[in-house]
Length: 150
Image (cartoon, rainbow, N blue to C red):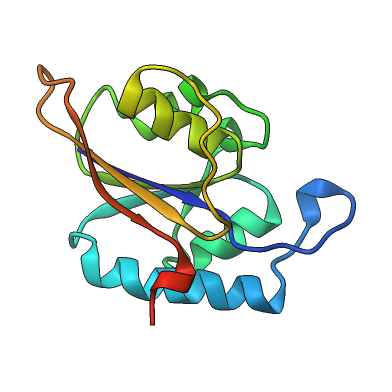
């Protein structure tokens, strides 16, 4: 199974936090990353998004048919997000659009076994891959920020 952890793109400051929208730059970041992902992803994948406006806007750049999941709210734990993604069950590729510090904590947990506060840039992805159900080896396939894409 492949798991793509996508931090939402740059958003406006303000309150309420849940309703913060992407900035003009954030829209460009999301579109740039979505174009890159579209060229890399298999034909069949699932996209999960936090219910926040900024995460849904980021996810919509890739696919308007995302699944919004409350377990991806800001402040949710890494294990909650992994459960929502179906990581332990395996299966098809899943793109998870969420928030820091959880996105970085998931990457750290899967790569080194501890929830360390790894930081991903706004709009960046961390693409992880795991073998079959009996194999706990996790491979980092890509770590890409929008400013790396032409």
